[in-house]
Image 1 (cartoon, helix red, strand yellow):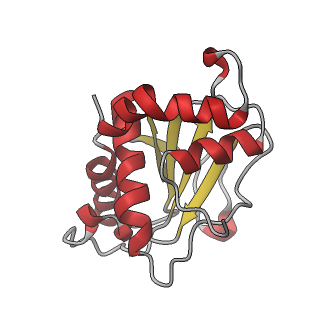
Image 2 (tube, rainbow, N blue to C red; image 1 turned 45 degrees about the horizontal axis):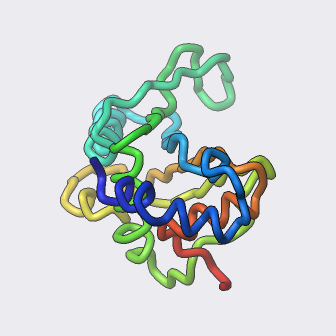
Length: 179
């Protein structure tokens, strides 16, 4: 079991319940899944393979390849071409990835002052965009020529609103800007 998961179950959930004023412990917000999406567009096969290997190494899970739905001649895009990859993490892998992101990857970003509050969707989910996937310590020695590929990370929670979701992510160690 992941360290963060154990810590959440044993002590952080009770703190969060008290802080939010929730009477039923089953209504305390929890992290349900983390979805990582990398859209790399039209690239050569070897670069594409390297990006997919990086995402596999980063998450510990093989990504699902996303194909183009329509052909767009101005972009030299054909229907069925692979233009992205995504991974959905749950359980121990989710907590392990969250811990690595909050504790080691985000602080490595140049001029990092915390993540913005504007990524909440109103229903308790938070989306964070990274410009490079090389901020993770595992990616430093990847040797991949496409190091400038970004990623979107979505944290899906059981929270009812943005306030509860922010409190959940903050108590789990997410460094928000501001307070």
